[in-house]
View 1 (cartoon, helix red, strand yellow):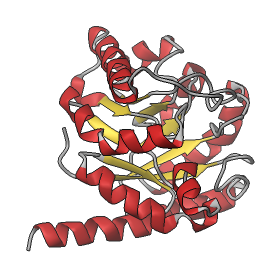
View 2 (cartoon, rainbow, N blue to C red; view 1 turned 60 degrees about the vertical axis):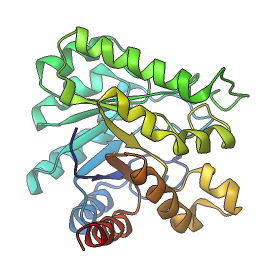
View 3 (cartoon, one colour; view 1 turned 45 degrees about the vertical axis):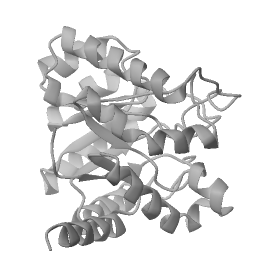
Length: 265
């Protein structure tokens, strides 16, 4: 596992994402935002064109490619920063391979089975996320026998599937899926028990940024959830998160720099 905590900056080119939907539809605006994310200290850029907020409908591969490809091409003209593609579609990934993308961020954990060989053959990393149900229905009364154990077993099985198909261990990232088929209580049980997932031996990605698990506690809209996000990120780091997927790269970079200063004092 990588000891350095990495910042994955989010760039949603969608019109219905819960926080930044519609902000970066225009290519010029999205490129400007990419430059800002890089300047602010991102280690990875995560680009997606399919909102996965509760109740959202799937987006076709064709429509995802139309939005993502021009942006990825433009990013590669200005930077070699690692690019993560937030998609469930093998067709999207195949189309983008020529731009030297680095990570497949798949909320469905390889339901599109063709992705496995694509990832292996092109030496890509993969982020395996737990989700109960689909974005359309995932928040309809989610239930578990034991939320931590159930998710642990799910991610263990998915990682073992990757290993059995020849994907290297250091290319596998696990994500417990905050907000994806979880109640408020489930989310905080997971956050407090993240350390258990490190027993699997893979890098852990936490996507907490500005989600309802913050807003429902503070009773604030997404625009006012920065401070809650930073507080939750501190707990995630303490509990062995390796990658923070965030909307606010600058503030997260300050947090990590301050943490390193204290640790090294």
